[in-house]
Image (tube, rainbow, N blue to C red; front, side, top):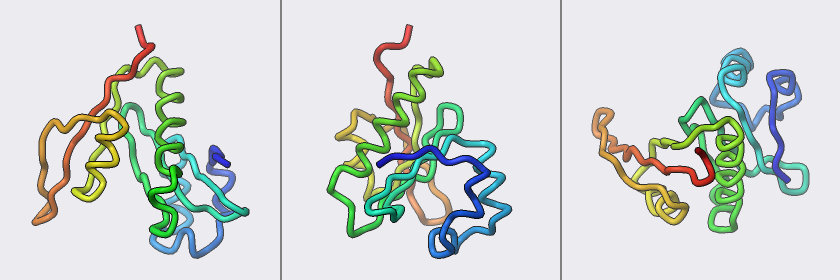
Length: 130
């Protein structure tokens, strides 16, 4: 099940799900982004968000990767973008996620480095947008 979250839901999130961020930090991000979570048996197994034309914070639990959760999240984000007349999405991909995004139709534009960490900037032109 895929659910849109709002800032009102922050107090309801289980503590293990938000251990890297304070409640206040999450509330700020939720005002800036459209955030989706995917659940299985009432547990959050993945998340993705959209900030304008930028795809952010795509994460699926390692035990659930390769089982379509990430693809479903990306499909829903792309539909949200289409409804907002966004014609192209950009994502900063890790090296390990590059193949995942390529399978979804994203193309590498360039590499960026943050210290020694390489990030691949990728984009996808969305069909059905005038």
